[in-house]
Image 1 (cartoon, helix red, strand yellow):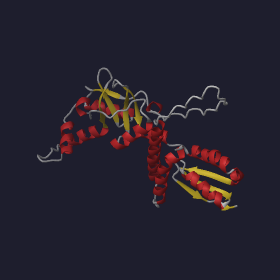
Image 2 (cartoon, helix red, strand yellow; image 1 turned 60 degrees about the vertical axis):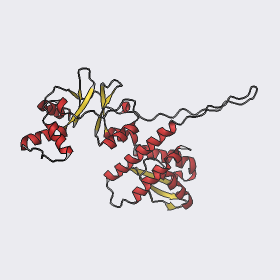
Image 3 (tube, helix red, strand yellow; image 1 turned 90 degrees about the horizontal axis):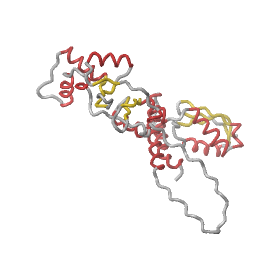
Length: 286
């Protein structure tokens, strides 16, 4: 199965979703591209993990020229390619007001809590501090019969240090984790950022959800280059000078002139490109 066929299901899902979104916003478009990118990257990784049988050796005396070999395809991006270094952290003994100052200084909503050997014990977030401050200010107490989440929140809010306020265990990833897997984990966990640790649990960086998304998405310029260089130039060379291609936020707009039959084939080819949200046909018949 070739790469285009591998991604066809994801492309079809994106086209169906795009056709059913009359009032879609840029946020919706970005979400569609995110889901399509994660699906496509996961499918590509699965295909790359499929074992390939080694070619059988030719019998002695059989002649044959050397077959040209294609260079190996680049591997999927990894967390190490998009993580931020160094990552902010706090010791377990740091008290509540000082944690708030660290979050403010680092302009972040979450920091890792580490032990003396820099191993991640958990994470403390602005939400944790906000809950503690709100409960302390209101004097509110949980009812005898209360939802378990609310009771846990009150219990944690009694803490005074990072170690007693943190959420543990922390959800972390390794530098070598594929970006697609990290993005899927971030989506499932509803996390905007995750600590990155080595295999001993020591903090080495932090990866943000936006960085994962950008690593999975091709830019509009890359999409336009693929259409012009890989599709128009290769399969429709006669029409290449008569067709204009514009891409904005994953939406492709075609202008100029082209034979109707060729235009239909071109649109199908473009719709199969990963990260394409929609194709707007402004082509006039040649």
